[in-house]
Image (cartoon, rainbow, N blue to C red):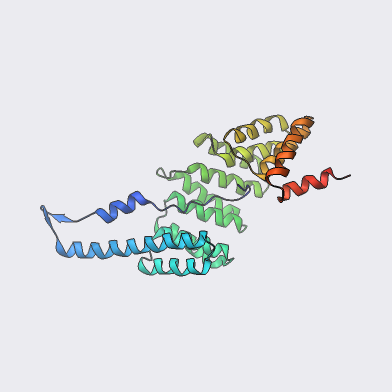
Length: 266
């Protein structure tokens, strides 16, 4: 797990899709043939877009970015209004550093459903990563305002990360705490508050959040380094050494492990 990174929501709304595909039109107890034909064509296009989007995701996971782009482009040819396809292709364009096209598709996903929490969260994350924090915050606010958004803690945590990057530590902590109000086991928010408290000189309270993070069974180079630094500041050399050993053992090639090597060198 990496921190100071934004969390995207690219999940396909399968329940809604199933309802759309299973629906039929009837009038007075009898089927209306012309409407069924029209509906069937629309459903078939959406189904084809879903299949090609799923294939595009699989290609991305396997590292075949060119193949993924072909499948996702095909998905949008079948259904230009299929939001998951816009989301996934935006992630792909971002991965290959084509930021104009990435932004185009993130914005298209929002335009197709302006109140959708996931789409607003994703656009907000993109805008913050590209240096537009003020605009990004408005989309995070739209995301958490969606009463049907299943993971509002994601948007709150992203908003906190955005503010933290802009050195607004108080605002960042407030948003991370809102994430925890929604989801007390949100690992990103737990780590981030611990890190913020440590940066502000409150190592004792920072330790409590790191302990809550670890109680979830989570681990990362950043969290282990933070645990080491907190215990060192509190004067607990043995506990700090345990974190150091874990970091060197579990993530020997990490930036954090190398940083400890440097500080330990005479």
